[in-house]
Image (tube, rainbow, N blue to C red; front, side, top):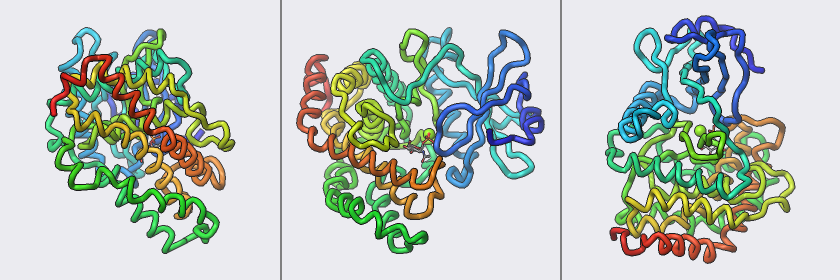
Length: 374
Ligand code: GN1
Ligand code: MG
């Protein structure tokens, strides 16, 4: 485990009852470091401690303001009796801030751990997928009346594929590690779809698609299900900022429809699980159908294609740059991730008509076609 030598200093700065001896690694994030801490009092709530990667999240104060705004808004929308179970709760530091900067310059936050919850890297059942869809749909729905302009853009152009492609080209031009030539097949493949994938950057789309408060990291493991596999809480609010709903739909589908993990080495194991796609879409539209416009509903399929494509571009860029952004477990990990995401993208692209029809059919099942505002 990566040691936290100054754990006593950090914990002393939060109003908490954490047992520092119980510290252990938690979760599988690629950016922040997350730790679990037990409560000293048996029966008291346990904690999650996170070191916020301030090389990537360069304005931790503004990011924290975003999180607080969103958390407070969500807590007004859920049943007050369950608010602390359905919405994450940040614990203030002794100075009243919801983060603490230690003597080494690292940034930390603490929140309550939600007991009896589960998260899944790979979805197994239609119930899990349906509940995940409901959770992310409800999340968007509860935030639909929050003005996105009040939120700080935590990472500018986060889901702007034009910018991501430009960063890939820059990495190739610099070729710091001499890796560009060996990934020519992947670069050529990406280039072949560059024009089509810039759909959300086109003025005709931007003029009809509303910017909303979106999560921007809707991997399935960012929704906590309870012990009965029912949706309980959406977590990882670092990247909550203005965006298009199709980004969140697409990123969730990227992890749900894939029969295997994001970084699968054996590309033939990557298959599309269509019943899970159907179930997620059903759960999502059940909630998001309350506010989606017709243009947004029609754009969902482009999100499904874009997110794995963009993820491949990002992983490949990091591989060429020498693995400076995403945490890696072995040499070539980012390349393996990029190849897996490209295989997934290819399969989604080949099935896009059928997937789009599924979305339309689900909308009609709920009578949403008529209800959608234009
Ligand atoms: C990163 O750290 P984690 O796993 O929550 C990344 C996401 C990617 C994801 C890929 C700030 O999220 O954008 O989709 O890895 N977060 C950031 O698994 O770049
Ligand atoms: Mg994240």
